[in-house]
Length: 379
Ligand code: NAP
Image (cartoon, rainbow, N blue to C red; front, top):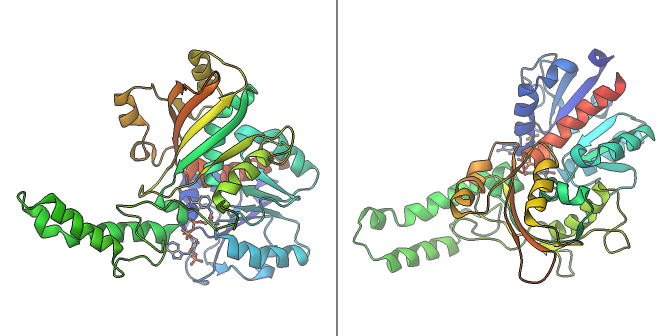
């Protein structure tokens, strides 16, 4: 049965897609089905060489060729999903659509996949005929994995999440632009830097001018991210909330199978989402209101024992600098959780800082695990 399944891949050369390909190759996922690769820009070219893969790239907009797949995994982005998914479904396709984009996430007939937290919910959705299996927002998935132990114990009243999101969260072109901006800023003071005697305020002034200059590469971010930050991620919803901030509460409750945020029984998640100049990994400073004033040692045990990926970092300066940082976590499946401390606001207030690779557990990993789940369900 397994060998007969045909899986189509779209958007495999982007940020999420490349990481997905690497993960699937290292877990030998491609051995388990036949693969067909699609491209929106280069059909006919050589496809990635994987076990059981077709040799040439197909057109990502060719509904007939897409429709021959039992499952389609797409990391191409929301515009592609919006353009192709309705037409494919409209043409009667009943395969599994596994997607990294947010477009379909909140649809009633879609499930958001984060199986360490909602495996049963995914299974029952698939059993009742749900065929759209969508990866969650990267920040939300990483936050839920970090807090998994507290959620399991049912002790979370509300969460405030202040995020520090990497450039790569916006895609391959943004990551390149951050590096170009760094290079541009460096070049503006290269000579002064080489001279240890050059005044630091002059260096600062020149760099500030460079970051404000129209010549700074800024086509993707619209402004400087290097040497700067952007306190807005994703679209403006017009009510003072960014779409990234809205996703936190909306998606977290859907993933957990709870009522919509703000209604009784829901988890309240609020915060401010900020883009910073990290290359990869999203970090979050969480303030968590617990319903019980648990001892810190018990909180650490709950968090550490919830899933195999969480790693509790001791709340010391040295451990934090060495292990609770994007440069350390990047490229790893580990979710680092640290700065755990009771806060002075009152009983049950907890601080937590967490760092996770948004391309792994925040994007690629839930998708490849969803594919594995489907294969298991078909056995
Ligand atoms: P991306 O890097 O911009 O890639 C998307 C597509 O852009 C590629 O498949 C490719 O399509 C095209 N592309 C154009 N120039 C490229 C270049 N220089 N290098 C590579 N690809 C290039 O987008 P992404 O970050 O992977 O995001 C894909 C989807 O996942 C989005 O919906 C996003 O919201 C979601 N997501 C992203 C993250 C993240 O951390 N980045 C996390 C969770 C979810 P062609 O080959 O057809 O030209």
